[in-house]
Every structure is written in C-alpha cells, then in structure tokens.
Length: 336
Image (cartoon, rainbow, N blue to C red; front, side, top):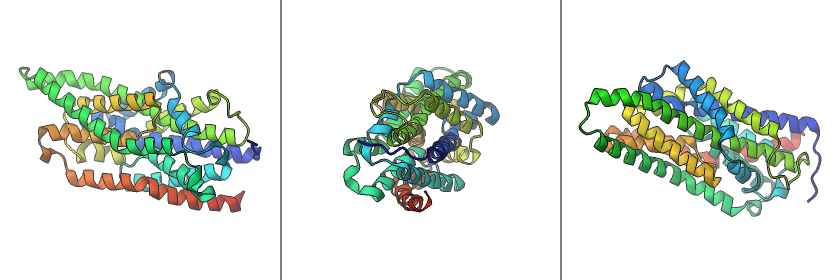
C-alpha cells in the first residue's frame, strides 16, 4: 500500500482540527459527568468542572487504546483514507456538534465523528470500503449503551432502596452526597477513556494515511495520545452549561442517591465498552442511566417528552454528520 506523503501544513492543520474537535467533545460532554453532581448540589459548577477534567486526563493511565484501534483501523479499509476524508469527517462532526450544542440538545460527539468518517469515505469510494463489523458494533451500541445504562441505573437504585430501607432519609442523603464524588469521578474517568481515544484513532488514521506513521505500529505516537487527553480535559474545564440543565433537571429530578446510581450505572457501561474497544456515546449512556433511575420512582417521574427529543437527535446524528462530511470532502478537493 503506497502512502502519499501529504504536504506537512495540511497534516498539521488536520491534527489541529482534530484536537479542536476533541476539545469541543470535552466542552460538549462536560455536562454528562457533572450534571448530576451539580443538580444535586454536591459540588458548585466551577468545582465540578475542574474535578471532571482531572479524571478525564487521568484515564490516560487506566485504559488500553482499544477504542483508538477500532476508530483508526476498524471502521474503514486503511487504503481509502486520505487528507480529504479526514477533513470531511471532522467538518461533519464539528458542524453537527455546534448545532446541537447551540440548541442545547445532548447528542453524541462520538457518533458524529463515526458518521463523519462514514460519510466522507462513501463520498470518496462508496460503501464497499467500510468495514461492516466495526460499523455494526458501533451502531449496535447506540442502542445497547443507553439500555445497559438504564438497566444498571435502575438496578442500582432498587438495590440501594432495599439496603437502606430502614435508614433515615436525611442520613442516606448525607452519605450519598459524599459517595457521589466517587461515582462522578468514575464516570469522568470512563468519559476520558472512551472519548479521547476516538480522536486519537482519527489522528492515527491520518498519520498512517499520510505516511508519517507505519500501519504496522502497535500504537499511535505518544504526542497524539497526550495532546488528545489534555484537550478533552481542557474542554471539560470550559464546559458547556447549556446542556447541564437538560441532563440534570429536565429529564428527571435527581437526589444524591439517584445521582450516585445513575453515574455508577453509566460508568460501568463505559468501562465495559472501552474494554471491548467500542466507541460509545457518553451522552447516551448517562441519559439511559438517568431515565432508569427516574423510572424506578414512577414512570411519570421521567419527562418522556424531553427524552423523546433527545432520541430524535441521536437517530439523526450519524446520517446528518455523514451528509455534511460528504460535502466537506468535496469542498476539500477544491481547497487543497
């Protein structure tokens, strides 16, 4: 497979764009890991973002790069990727992210990126160049991760309610305020581990395609790994408050016990997916867990209207970002 050494400035620009996407991912998804801690009043918003950013970065020492390998080598045939494909993928993902952030809709940066890659590759050389297994795995988890979050969240909630059935409510509340720090930390760890790796995978894909890294290398260059983890942490620090409100209060009202169960359920789901090397959406996962916790109280505790809007945004994410990515691909052919 011959790799065309692309102009250095193009590669540098694309890496910068990918890191900007990663920063935006942190910015966009900061809400997920801290919405519950903030909405239950355990931490102030400013404390919460610093807390989440720290755990986002620490994930670099915890998780294997299995998600990066899936994105970098497991979604499209290696020979297809070039600078135009990467440019298109990033434009598609970033555009969709900005739109959903502006309207305060929790959509998934991860699936926007996958959609972007798929759209740009189809625009270049049709469906045949996609690796069906990698894509099916990712698409299946669009449904599996919120369901798993829902299941684990509601099971935790039922278990906790049973264990503490004879304890005074205000005492339980006090304990779980402290425990929520553990669950929020675990969730941010999972968020950093799964999400930073998607961008690492994309940069890896670009470096292989442009001949700056050999396809046989076991892992991407260290600078790519560190800069992606730093970028997602920084993004979380400047996190978006617009989405926090939707997640924490609009879907269902949460108490510290509920917050703890939702985050623990979400964190476990993320750990499982990252271990399996599947890029999942942290947004979907925590939303599923929050709905699961809310529904154990009574089905009417969940505002199904808001949950419904969110589901629409999910179903649209991959096709919408794929479409924009295809346009981005054709534009880039003109540009460079």
